[in-house]
Length: 215
Image: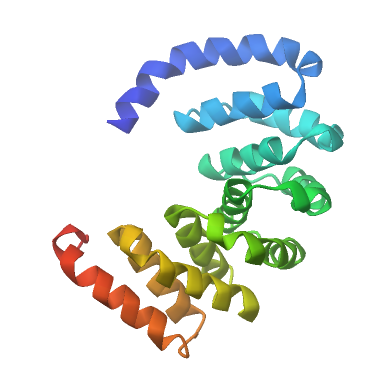
């Protein structure tokens, strides 16, 4: 179904990209990030546009607010568009502005770097320190994505993972099979074997949902 949506949108988005390329320097940061987010949402990977957005964004990165920064990171990761210069610029600017990041911005950013296998430990340390006090506002998917991202990148931050475990146990009844399995995998991968209460909570929550788990 998603492929069909992509196919139907490709001519429209190709035409739109050609138009945007002529207007990009005049666009504000939010317009640029919203544009690339729209392309990523329907899985249209328009290389000339992505290259132009990367160049424009890198040069004007100070203009990007937390939403724009996380949108850019999420979009390039979703399209598996590896751009080291852009992601380095996003990282540096994100670290400067992490105090104003919302939980969704934090979760999407750490997920994006993991999806692209970028081990930016300076960014991950900064996000960990900033996230601990905000975990109570994380949605289940944001908790799962954060745990998965840390494990995928082999990043160990004991205070963050302990705080994340507490929050997962508090909201374990809201987690779906994908979230439950992802969090269990993350803690096992990072060898957090002392988190027995967490694993027991995940196990108890998973049992009624077994028919929904993918084989």
